[in-house]
Image (cartoon, rainbow, N blue to C red; front, side):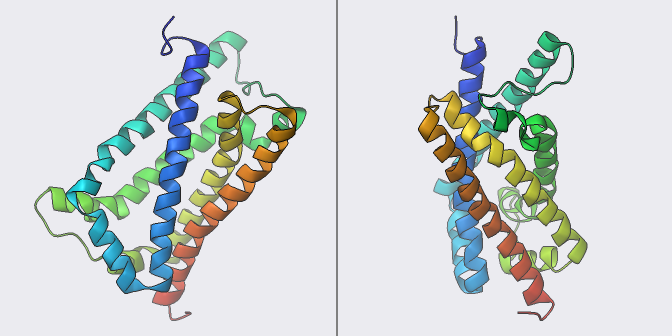
Length: 220
């Protein structure tokens, strides 16, 4: 049986693609934080990200993201059919089963996708896509200010970050469990490590948004 056809194979692919996306988010957050401390440094970072060699990563990232979504929805539909209703994935511990995030991963995932669509229209479309179309990329600092200088937009982004946090707080350790890191002692440690890591990760994104809002509105 092919790994693409077996249930465990699909879970492995979704776990690996999910961890790949966590790695991307980590890099993305670190680059974004530069804007908090140095607008000039952020400009240089964005110039570097616009290089052709870096642009090669865009289709790879898109492929990983699409694969993750496809397998997530496929596994959810399979579970619905096999269980006859909308029930959560089976997990190894009672605490995990009681987790709100574990029961609502598919909905959180849908919110994350909607947020990414919004994010792409705010930044990627005016920067990388504009360059690909032969135009001039928008100034990243100006774009950052225009986006997060608006309080409703900033609040929407923060709500999105919370949804990603909830999604990853379950997905991080769940992926490691699927990959075999399910020793009883280390399982609890991985859960704690995952929550701390994801909190720092999304806290970094939120800091970028809040700092940009404060700077534009003369609060920083």
